[in-house]
Length: 160
Image 1 (tube, rainbow, N blue to C red):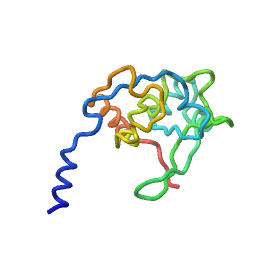
Image 2: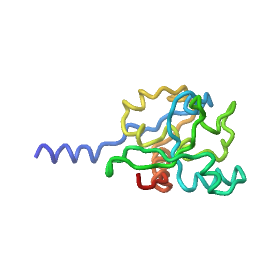
Image 3: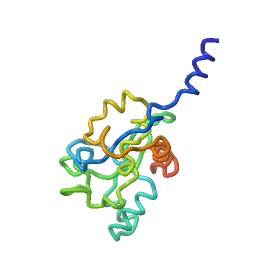
């Protein structure tokens, strides 16, 4: 009986962002530089970037991308397509600013409205970003749209 009540309670629970959140990118570039990380790409991301750089698709992938092992809840590990990094861990497209800003990948466009951040208020509060809780108001429908966009444009994967 107790378990059923808990499940029902959680099903009716609104997300912490139900009243919306404030966020405005300050273009500080902290999320683009100085730390190793992955910018995972969808097929649409790679096509838009290749077009922006006036490159053939395959040449773009060979020049600017890499396959990386990433955790997967089902298989344990999966190989996902990510942008390369420079030796100092800057994004391959960062040079005094984003050189592909108008065609930047979904992961960059949708920050900080990622499943991994929106899963809990504690994660949101722990986010170290100067744009958090400032500037533009983003309603819950807009946040849900960002979250849904990743489902529409999944990260490219191949067998590990």
